[in-house]
Length: 171
Image 1: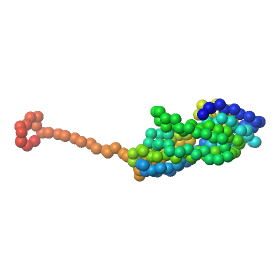
Image 2: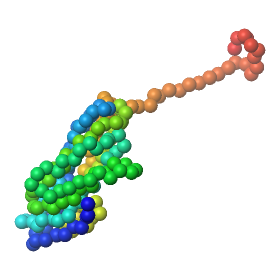
Image 3: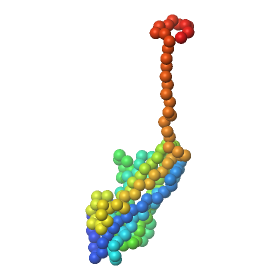
Image 4: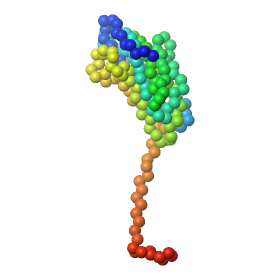
């Protein structure tokens, strides 16, 4: 996929992303995450061409399928090594959202929290009116199992009343 953004038109562009999915899941479960990318313009707006969406999946999620919906020209690919990354590119007309559904298989162990951040225009190649691009990334968390595992709070102490002993003697 080539990331060559171009902006045409008289309007202003503001890219926005939201990611949703289950807040809890189980190991070996198949589930979906939905990423909605929108061009929320000021005024009439302009189409943003060659918009890039980047979603590095945390260890514990294996992508099985990606669906970009219909009535758009978005295409996605999964890159592997060292982690699975979903990269998509397409055009965004004003106020016409594109929803990307990523179906994953949960391999993470129970009790683990999977924090996953997806970003639109991660390299900041498209001129936007949104200062700081505050809505260009979205983090979604999923707990695998009931609650995150906690380490036990144990303290072990030993003491002895004598500095030497013989086998079978009481201490």
